Length: 409
Image 1 (tube, rainbow, N blue to C red):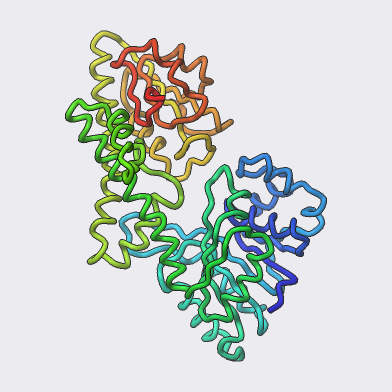
Image 2 (image 1 turned 90 degrees about the horizontal axis):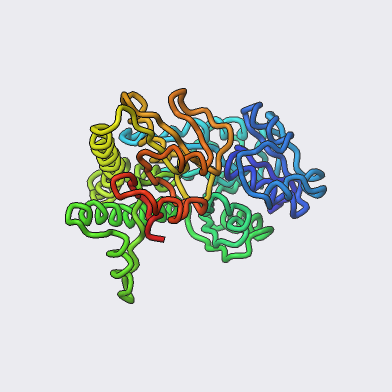
């Protein structure tokens, strides 16, 4: 069970931090990505991962010595796959081409005893399909001579390095030997517990975690719409309800974003349409919340334009979560796009965590002090630490729409 040389394929939000951590443990690590721009940015330390600890680690002498990047795969003891598996929300087919393109390239250089670890989000049964695919393509390899495991990541963007090291990990091999081999890799850096299981359970575990969160957020979002209809302050309602010792309602928002929670439920739904009705309804509810927010904004704009020729609409927050620069699947972006063609309004966006973003010519990015001065109608979309209640207390209820609880701080 050799792990002397490790290759990480896909140098994005997961692959790059993982490769850097492994290199920091004095293991020779080869990082691969088909995108030349990604490789050039890594060389220049111009990466999307906005974490001071990460850049410090990336530029450390130990990592520079042990971590090499390339577009061409070479032989290795361990191949870790962290490439995207996109899905169209109402399409039953996940795009697995990136993973199988990688497997096709790995197959040519596999030798008995090698380990393949899949970290990409996958439909249940993918790891077993990959195993069959490999032995079909390489008839010279004896059955079980290649170890294959599915090991899903559990990280919070903005805290990637710490969570990669401290969180428990699920390791699901196609057999017990594969699980043990993968365990040796994660023992190099994981301080949390390592839980061994089979590959199908590991695949479903990854999906189930994010479905659980999506369902709980859907309840909070649905409750917020019901409370609004009944003229009940949702933030006060949740605070009081959560005094119950066995109740913990989450805070609602303008929808659900992120590469995991907003996407992973569809992996289960599309494989299990008959039995995933609750999961599907939760996903629909979180999409409905976006539309509900859009409708409320339009209603406010209509009222305010009765007494004004033009209106400055300022959206506070563009990312999918607070105190992050991650915009993947952000409901804020979806909401703002619905106002690009509305006449008589000027659109401003205040997003303290993003610099030099290209959005739309009609949208002007402004700093917080300018945003407050421009405010005709303020829409609070993301609860960034910079957006404090005191900045908005002088504006009336008709001039502020709070979708994330900033005014309740």
